[in-house]
Length: 198
Length: 372
Image 1 (cartoon, rainbow over the protein chains, first blue to last red):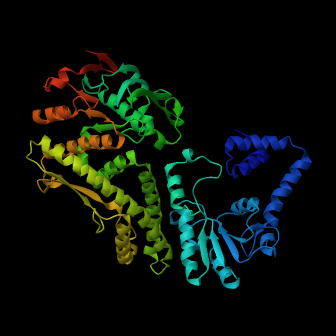
Image 2: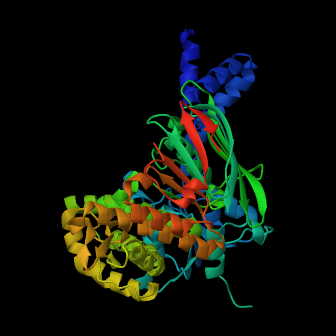
Image 3: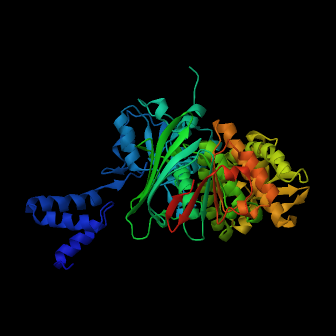
C-alpha cells in the first residue's frame, strides 16, 4: 500500500509502540490527520516532555521529574524500610495501596542469563551502595513470583545477608476476596506453605 | 470407565464419523492406511488433548478443512458426560460437560486412557528421554503439582545453563548467581525425585507379578532408577536435598568448565532387568516387548488404584505381534473389566474367546462398518 511520506513515517512511529501492529498503526495515523491541530501539537509536546523531563531518580531508580524523587525526598516516610520492585509500575501499584510508608528501590528488570540479563544489567549496585550509606533495617523483596523474580530476590538476599539487615520476601498465595475452590493446585500448595499461626 | 460413542468431524482422514462402542472389547479391522491408528489416536487425543504421534496439532485437522473436532461420551463413576476437543487455526479448545476448560490440567484426567502401540517398544529400547517422558506423563496424570515442579525445574535449568556458558568464558566472574540457581534447582529436583521414587515403587509392585504371569513364571522383572547423583529410593525430599547440595558443591568448578548442568532429574534413567540381565542391551526382542507390555498393564492397575476405575485401553497393532500365550494372557487379564480397542489387519491369527464376543468393525478409507 502506498501512502504519502508523512503518513508512512507516522505509521512507522506508531508501530514502535507496544501492542500496536501495522493495521492499528495505520488507523491511528489517519485518526491523527483528522484531529484538531492544537490537540496534535499538545500530543507531540507531551511525548517530548515525558521523555525529556522525566529521569530516573538517582537514589531509588523510580521515574521522576525531580531528583531525588518525591518519595525519596519525603521526610515523613520511613527510610529504614526499603521495598525492592522490578518496575516503576510496581511502585505505582504499591502506592495505590496507600499503606506502605517506607521507600522503594526499582531494579528495572530481573536477572535472566537466558535473555542476557545479568546482575550488572539491573539496578542492584546502587541498592548495595544505598544500604551502606543509609540506616536501613529491613529490605522487602517484592519481585514477581516467577523464575526470574525469584532468582533475583534470592541473589539480592545472598548479597545483603552478611550485613545483618533483615530481609523479607512478600507472601504468595490466595487472592483476597477469592474462593478457595477456584484456586489452582499450585497456588493452594504455596498458600499452605506460607500459612501462619493465629 | 468406558467410552460410549465418538464423533469425528474433519479429523485426519475422517470427514465425518459417528460410532458407538461396546463396553468391553472393540476390534477394528482394516488394511494399512485406512484410518485404524487415526481412530485410536482420536480416542487418545480426547483424553489428553494432544496426539501421541505428533506435537503439531494442525496435522490432526483434515486436509483443506478449517477446523477438526472430536466429541465423545464417556461413562465414569455411574454417570455419562460429553467431552469435546476442537482444533482450529486459533488453537484448541477442550470442553468437559459442554463447559470449556481453560486450563488443560483441569481437563486431562476426565477420561483415563492407556495406549499400547508399536512405538512403545521404545520405552525399553529407546533413549533415556523416552523413559523420562513415560514417567513424567504417568505421574502428571494423577498429580498436577508434579507438572508444576517439572516446569519450574526446566525453566531454572535453562537459566542455569545459560549462566554456566557465560561463566565458562569468564571463570573469574562472581559465582553468587550460579549458587542461587543451584539452590532453586535443588528445591524442585528433590521434590521431583521423591515423587518419582514413590511412583516407581508402585509401578514395580504391579509390574512384577504381571510380568511373571505373562512369561509363565520364567521371567523376573526388576526396575531400577538410574540417578545421576548418589540418591536412593528410601530417601525423602529432605534427605535428597542434602545429597544434592553436597554433590553440586563438589562439581561446581567442573560444571563451569563444561558450561552445562551435569546432574539432575533431567539426566536420569530407568533400567529394566529380566532375570538380572539388562533388557535394553541383553534382552531379546520378545523380552523387550513383554517388558513394555507389563509396564503398560501395570499402568492400568496404577490408574485403578488412583482413580478407582479402570482406564480405557488402546492396543494399536500390537496384538498380532505377541505369541499365542502372551495374547491370551493379555486378553484374560483385561477381560470384562477394561474397555479395550484392538486394531489389526485381520482377526485370523487371534484365537481367543474374547475376540469371538467382541464388537467387530471394519474400516475402509475412513468409513467404518459395524460387522456385529
